[in-house]
Image (tube, rainbow, N blue to C red; front, top):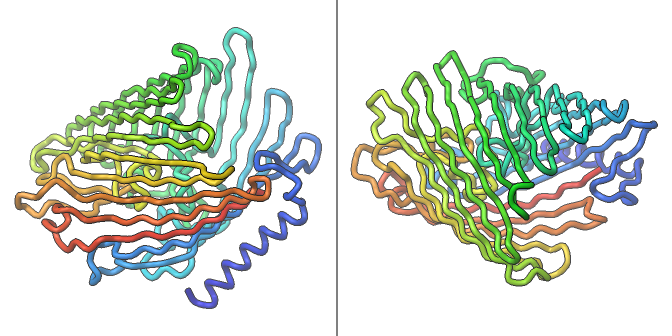
Length: 442
């Protein structure tokens, strides 16, 4: 990083630290807010992260194969509780990247950079009722459902993800409820106001409609969900219908979750039919230190013939993939088999340690691509008989909060061991990822 980049990063950090001193955040817990006037509160956060990426293209001669940079994210928000039934929320965000040698921080959409812009702005109306509560949220907001395998706010990336949406909730969200929403994802323009301007990304140009049912009351200590989602982009003839269900529950020291989704419709003018499933289980050996061993299997269909009129690659929609398929973000829920083993423990209070071992195969190695967490192509078939085994990944993380849990530290190391598919389709060096993150809740 050059001196100018370091100075810019320090200036952002000092600005937020000054804010925290003025409002004396040390006296608050992470979930509390600062009252400015009756019914009006202010909050925010500062997040910084250093990332070091080595051999991420698996080829030392490839541009951007190795890179390191500093990410900063500043958020400030206001909430006005106008009445018991009506409230307004406004949040601004500034995101920046310094020091990278290969990342375009001026491209749209952008996951790294966004000069101070409107992040969220919505109105809430709630009508409590003993028989059938209702709620409406209208405006720029985050959509988060289930485990976020298909729809989440993608908080790991520097700019995160928001939608301009109208959402209607019917029922008690702590028991049984259904959301109906119409939305348009908001692509991040790092230099101008974020709006619906056309981009080169099909997902950034898409609208999303959905119905999502959640039931906590049917099975004790469990949640059962059912959903219908429609991603629509008329300019390229995308009309992807997704129907599915999810279950998650606990029994004493056991936990289990599963998700199944089927898709139909059109994808780029082709007839679309695809399928994905997830199943996971865990056992907590000692609740006193949260010692847990887990195993997970994920599958998403690929396209078995790129020359016909059918499209079989599962559409991952708008997920938070970073949490599920390796922290190096080499995979999405598309054309893949994935088996994961995890172990997590809290040896001392508030310190959380996690180790994960991932293995990856392509469902259609000879006819479909390898897709990364942002749904982009990593490698394509080379026309020969490719081995399906892409490789394995080890993720090691440690998280620790201090200062009444308002300041959270996260450090991680990941290594990717390339498999036969990578060597079949080109160079195959192993890759490494090291990062350090600090987040301050204001």
